Image 1 (cartoon, rainbow, N blue to C red):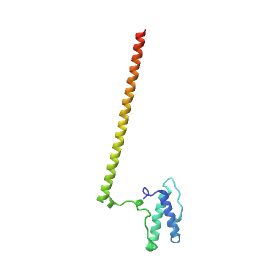
Image 2 (cartoon, helix red, strand yellow; image 1 turned 120 degrees about the vertical axis):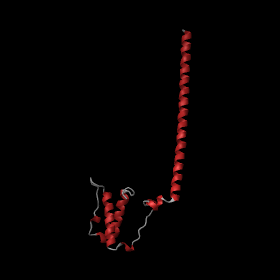
Image 3 (cartoon, rainbow, N blue to C red; image 1 turned 90 degrees about the vertical axis):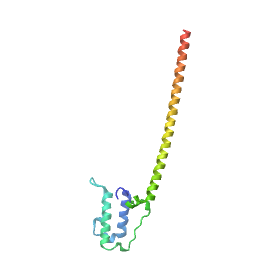
Image 4 (cartoon, one colour; image 1 turned 135 degrees about the vertical axis):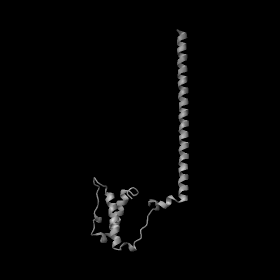
Length: 143
């Protein structure tokens, strides 16, 4: 959970739970606003507070009439069965193949540009050497 949700998401979630269920949570440490310490971050403590709040609310049967849903389903952690969904596997494979193809094309373009640069540099160097030889020959024949 800590790696999936941002510290801000966790903090805002705890504040919302406390706001909605303050009357039922008044006796516990869940209402305490957490700060980071050297042993753990504030959002770690707040996540533990969220779990503790749900335990208290569940034991008081407060959650029976509550319905929880995600605002954005893409933000929910995935569960194991999705990994075995053949359609999901094919979709991931297609995206991977597209990414590999794109990277290959970009590398080929970079290689071609690099080869052209080397040819240009070589031709330029050969021209400079040829000019110097001609200058030396004309100096030698003049002297």
